[in-house]
Length: 257
Image (cartoon, rainbow, N blue to C red; front, side, top):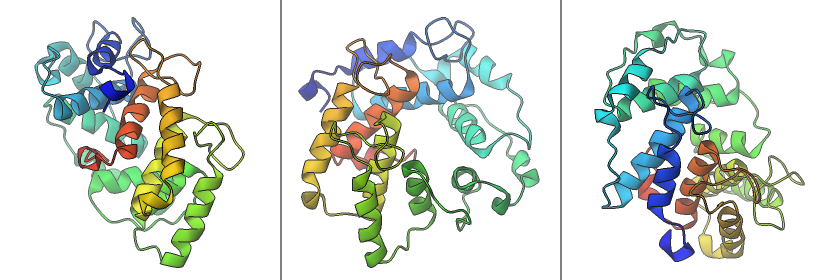
C-alpha cells in the first residue's frame, strides 16, 4: 500500500532509527535525549513494519543492549500517569524486558482519573472500566467508544455526525468541529469510525479525503509531520502509518491498540 503512494518503508524505518540515541532510547530528533514516549512511538512503527513486510531492516530491539539499558534505568511510581506507564510497558515488551507489575496495586481508583487516564488504565489492568468522564475532543471520543462499546444505534448516528463535522476541507480532522487539522486527530477520528462499525461505502468520500490529508503530511524525508508543511516527528509518523492502515481496512495489524 505504501509503495502505491510512493512512500517507502525503508525510508520510514531509516527516519526512525536516525532518532535512536547512542544511549539506547529514541528522541524527538536525531541526537536529542531519549524519552519514554518517543521510544514507544519509534518501537511501535518498527514493529508494524516488521509485522507487515518481509524486509530485514537490520534492527532488533530485543537485541539492542543499549535500549534495554535505557529502559531498565527508568524509575516509575504510582504518581506516573497511566499513559506513560502503558508506553513504558509496551516498549519493554518489544525489547523483551520483564517488567514488574506490582505498581498497579497502588494505582488510585479509576474514577480519580480523566478519561484518557481511564483508557490507559483499562489497557494496563486488562479490566473493563466504565468511563465516568464526559468526552470533549475527538481523541476522548475514540477512547470513550473503546471503553463503552455498547452504544445504541440512534446514538451512533449522532456521534458519526459529530465526527464528520470535525473533518476539514483539507481532509484532516480537528480536535473539535471548526478546528485545525492534525494527524493525531485524524487517527483518532478514524479509530472512532472503526469502533462505531460504520459502513464504509457510506463515508468513502470522507475516507478518501482523510487519505489525501495523511499523504500530505509525508515530508519526503521518511517521516511525517502533524500537518502539511510541518517538521517530521516520531509521534506524527506513528499516527500517520497507523492512519494509513485504518483507511486501507488492514485492521488486523492494529492489535497494539
